[in-house]
Length: 270
Image (cartoon, rainbow, N blue to C red):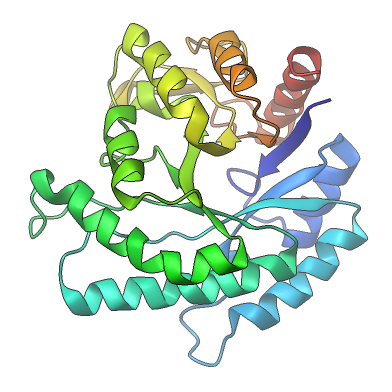
């Protein structure tokens, strides 16, 4: 039986967190991926992610839902020692709060390209930050699921090189099914990426669409160019038993679009 989730993203902006959770419950989702912004106002120096996690965790549970992952919004493409320390300390605070929500998975960014970090040092920079995180994630059983998001980590060969360099069972991948195509990789290469990233996958974003970069158009699952059956087969081969988390970016009103994505998952992931 599949575990079906939804990311707290791309839904009506006027919805409160409570309204989002009610929608998830009423639509039939079982899991939600939340953002660190849902529990922590980082612009407020007095805000504490732990306090927010207690409040939000209670709200999630009252709706009969579970948290599949907490997204961190970090940037590990840094070489400056002070920046590294700041990013790692921030991640520590997020990791301490996650179990209060009932999850041990942090959906982690690689980071953003920047002039002061040459592309040839992307892996080195990210690995340095992730390696420092080992001291607090491994004893706590926290898993950092590095997303193939943006323009740095949207290449499975680079991701695998990164994971091998960090060498921790607690550092792996969030597999976003669309993002490799969004970044401009061709479909044959993407099919290979699914196979090599599957053994490292802790969490997923089930997403479909067509085109790359500025030509990208989101779609309901099963209505775009993504070979979703290939994704499911690769994950099944390695015994993936985590959450399949819908992320919808199509033009159709998002509550309806997410509902159709759930219908696809129930029909294809049993």
